[in-house]
Length: 262
Image (cartoon, rainbow, N blue to C red; front, side):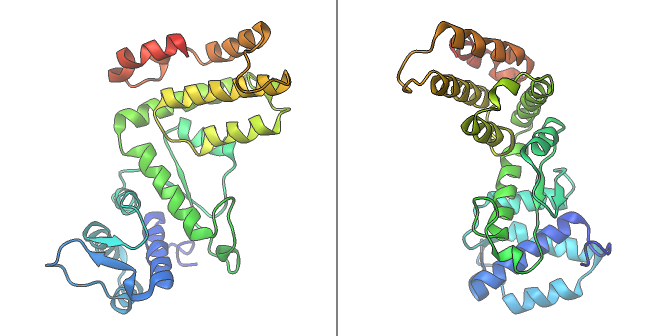
């Protein structure tokens, strides 16, 4: 692979991967102009350029395409993420495997996100977790990259929340809950597939703790928790500290009331 050989860096390879998939799936309809003054995109011409261009010339052409064209079936956040990666603004990590949820938690606590590219045939055409193929999984990773990086304040809040969550996990705070498959699945979703406001993440964590205790007590979702379950949940939430530890500063006054009632 030319990326492994050093011909491309990670973001250039990711952009090439994206465009080759787009053309393979959609043919000549793979992209369209944002501005009528720009030339129409041509699959054959773009493939020729991608094969011939090198170095910064290739990077520049990829940036130009990502910024000036829209891509069929792809939300606008995806090319934005590729542009920011190509410019070296967002420190994404290219992976050729699927990181485990705990690995993603640790990356996010340190301000990073992974993007997975699978290149081996026929693996790339087979389902990847809950996605139908490697390209859809790749797009999903880029969509999450956008959610993680696009707002500096929100990113700071997410990083801080994930750092607190990582610390609590490493201290064994969640160990008593890992005998429940449903809780494990939902916790993994929180740690690896939920890039949102940290207060939303905190409320989600509390909700899955409540559900787990209700299952243990053989109760319906509408039933009240026992006093012991309420105390156990509050112990976990206290282990995460207060919202002031990880909320973006401008959100603190707005969200503090949710912390008190959550």
